[in-house]
Length: 113
Image 1: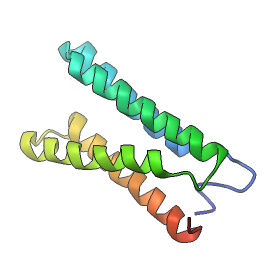
Image 2: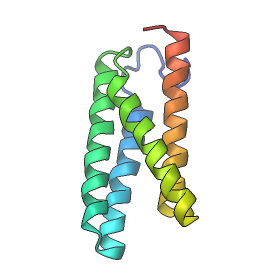
Image 3: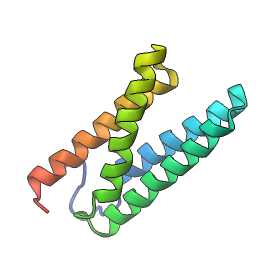
Image 4: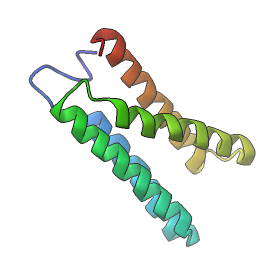
């Protein structure tokens, strides 16, 4: 996991990128379809993921908010993808969320909490 969280580079860039992806998905849903629920959910979940990335940047062992946000989105967006069979946005978000859960899992294995 040294590649993902380089010693000396305390910023969780992957976490921030994930948060931006989630938030931008909500904004895109609003712009394309006028969906206020998409906007609210995207900004809320993206904000929580961003806060989780900030927490990890200050303390690499503080993964719980990031894990909760990405784990919840993995389940919810996977169900949405299963029902809609549309890759955008549900499949992309589910996949990115699953990768984020995997990253956090590897961190837990490498540096037990």
